[in-house]
Amino acid sequence: MSEALTNISAHSAVTSAPLLSARGLCFDAGGQRLIDGIDLDIAPGRCTVIMGANGSGKSLLLRLLHGLIEPTDGAVSWCGQPLDRAARREQAMVFQRPVMLRRSVAANLRFALSVRGVRGAKRKAQEEETIARARMDALKDKPARVLSGGEQQRLAMARAMIGAPRMLFLDEPTASLDPASILAIEQLIQEARDNGTTIVLVTHDPGQARRLGDDLFFLHGGRIAETGPIMQVLEKPTSKAAQAWLSGRLFVPNTP
Amino acid sequence: MESFSAILIEAIGLILSWDPDVIEIIMLSLRVTLTAVAAACLIGLPLGAIVGAFRFPMRTGVIVAMNTLMGLPPVVVGLLVYLMLSASGPMGVLGLLYTPTAMIIAQTILVTPIVAALTRQVIEDLNGEYAEQFASLGVGPLDRVLALLWDARYSLLTVALAGFGRAVAEVGAVIIVGGNINHVTRVMTTTIALETSKGNLELALALGLILLVIAVIVNGLLMAIRGTAARAAYV
Ligand SMILES: Nc1ncnc2c1ncn2[C@@H]1O[C@H](COP(=O)(O)OP(=O)(O)OP(=O)(O)O)[C@@H](O)[C@H]1O
Ligand SMILES: [Mg+2]
Image (cartoon, rainbow over all chains, first blue to last red):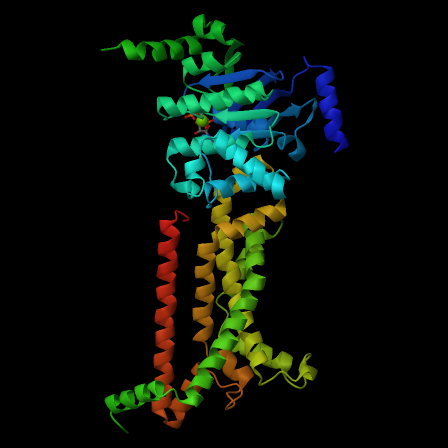
């Protein structure tokens, strides 16, 4: 408890200090170096976008930053401290493929609330509030696993936002969703930002990156190929990898 | 010797007439087996869940042991429990030999590894799916085990039924520790064994038919559980 309090005060005293940093982050699996020496700092309140081709290591990087897998080399720190389970509880993640418990929508949210230590009448109130925010009133008694992909993403977002985490990792939260669902998710992301949540967002959509992001990291083969303010990187990419990927991306709709 | 059809007709007659002796035997069978399965679940579910959900040293050894114990020969279990409970054994003073309690103990020992090993497999698969989400949410060890057990509830019901099926049809262990004493420890399987050897085939066949019916009911329940689980997208 007291440790958490000192963290918060330290954070508000020096707002420019990074909330999360990685130094020399490497991850090997199957005899391959999949994440190769990544250094990054994420300042509080920012929305950091990670882009890159399929297989460039975006999901792995999120897992490492969230402390779900141990780096082979290097380290992640949270408010200047090593990342531990207590730190992870101040963060939340929406996975590329959402995992729902074999329970109703409401019970899924209830579970997340209990885990965060919210019980009794307070839990009931927060459960209803979360369902309303995710616009899932009509779905709340359905088994979560029969929901459509878009509905599951919305539920995953709502679940991740429970307890107002200080940092939210979002791994392609709008992939394969229709425009209305994308809008709904982006509104939730915006809402989290407005509440002061720091966001790390993986996306393949430059438009979404522009709408939501501040900074961009472009990943290529497990390394950071380029980084900078989002507009700058999207409009004038300097690295070959980002240039190739972005031009391919932008020219696709124009090809006959 | 009478013809098979004559014996069959007499056996069915025994069942339909609700013969009090037959009823008593069936009820004792169900009481012993259900109690043993309940005890086995009480031990085997948490044990299997813990081994399935956590990594610890010697884990592989524990799994191999559990899987091996699943195939324990019933007569060996009967013999071991007999040695424990017999007058000269370490628990002889309790005077449990040749009581339904002795049969419950033997069947519990027989069924617990089955429940534990099957539970371990079910929980390990589910944990593989949930592990990252749980780690992200910061779920503690106790909440994790409870959530896995609850979410695997349909699969675990089928595990319990598998244990029941094995115990209710088992004869080797209960005959050694129960002794097949009339009105005291006589259950369906031991009665079938005894009455067949005495040539009292009507009673043996009547009980055999009941056992078959129970097997059909168990398998019907298994199908129903699977159907319910699939409809509710809980699989
Ligand atoms: N446990 C693992 N063992 C071996 N290889 C792995 C493992 N996890 C990931 N990889 C490999 O690492 C690379 C990066 O994977 P990652 O999931 O981070 O890609 P990504 O950038 O998120 O791609 P996408 O855009 O398709 O989601 C891939 O080539 C993948 O096959
Ligand atoms: Mg990915």
